[in-house]
Length: 606
Ligand code: G6P
Image 1 (cartoon, rainbow, N blue to C red):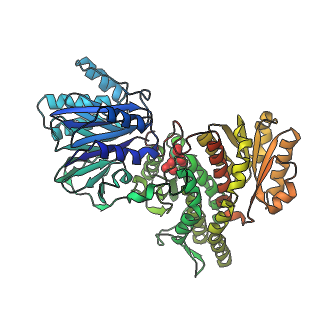
Image 2: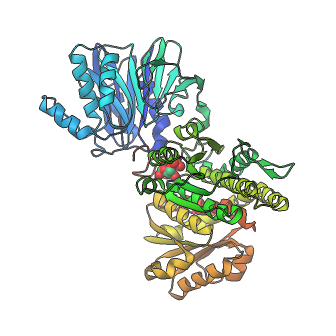
Image 3: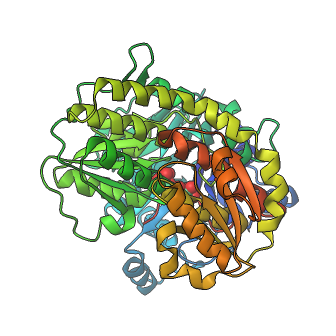
């Protein structure tokens, strides 16, 4: 979603700001802009669409200035036009903003009544006007911001530039993350560490309600009660990690990284010599957990759905599962002794974060499976369960999903042992199966070319159906989500057995049906559903192992052969063909697979 970069610099900043925005492109956006302070005035360039449009505007009309702010915008209030692009400015201040100012309407009405004129449809512009009013009334910038912040409801990360103050930027955070960077005679603001990667390796994360005054001498942070506070300086992100290597897209690179990152993740959760599963906080008490409530969004939600099967099967613990946006507002019953488990790549998804805070207020223990260890969710967890996928840049989550599954399988086994439901030999078997996952994922990747070659048969479809049973059902949902995101083909995932209660009406020779069916206890049942599709002229793509394909592959439109694996690790392995199919179909249709239209990597608004 929206990205922020700000620099209090010792030399011209517009190029460095543009470079920072390029690093934030992966978050998803539809317009962009930069403002600087030069010759005692605020000046800005903005453009709708991709950053190349902003770069063109800057090349035609360069923007001098040693201090400035920059933004990539993902439209919420008002379309993705140049007028609605940030920074929003008055003569006195320019503002970039992530999040939503929920009370912007009454604020805007109030400002208009006082004669202020608006030039955009955004919620953000009220911030520029409110601060301007304070400056015009004679207040110093910091005082003006201090007065205005309590008037803003909702979620925000703000970076504010002031006219004729090339030594100053002010940032503020409530709900949306904001990072400060420290340089040599310079200071920086960024919506995440990656934005600041080439500028500095010394950063601090603002806490909720913090605001910060950045100058050439560093940064002074204040908490929500306006007391000066220190925030720890930590290591920033490494600039090199975000190139595509020799892959044409980040998505493909990240799919190929899965064997390594899953192995890396499992190292923290398995003791291979002792053949034991373990947690990063071994003393965390899982034995008394009475119920688990899993909450997440998007692909992370489907990882949670796989985990529900595992927790119930292995640990015999009741599990509730919700998408975060529903959980928070449906008055869930959260009894004492419950574990609320949040799954998120970014650790910043607004709905999941709001759900986490609700669960904490209701007395739940909070566990978080998260890929960004410095994220808000990571910092608010009682039990932090990191995935070690490394930065994920492709908007559609791939390697983070695989690592989430690895952590969740290990957590299921830990929970089962703590509850006395896992005999030592069963635990040893789980460790052995999980340890086989990286090699099996590697084997699955070997079918990339075959999947690319058959992708054209799916690329011409208008609708695609994915079917699976058991833990392959969440994979069917994930497959459909991936295809929608990446190729813009309408797709639905269904529990194979449920197909005859609706989607079977859609079946004809134009609707490819992707059946995910590793051989195993549910195979025959899924194959029966597959035959129901075939009997109605449906074209089946069967993803199974050699035994499954030998038994049921005849007459299929295509088959994709996976290695023979234990059912526990099947979701990690079968995720690969599902991802590759979406990727190749997207590429075949000429779609922007790394930055699909309208989507954001990290959704920081509710
Ligand atoms: C967005 C992304 C998805 C991701 C979802 C949840 O929709 O495009 O790839 O699965 O958010 O994000 P999270 O960071 O909480 O896992």
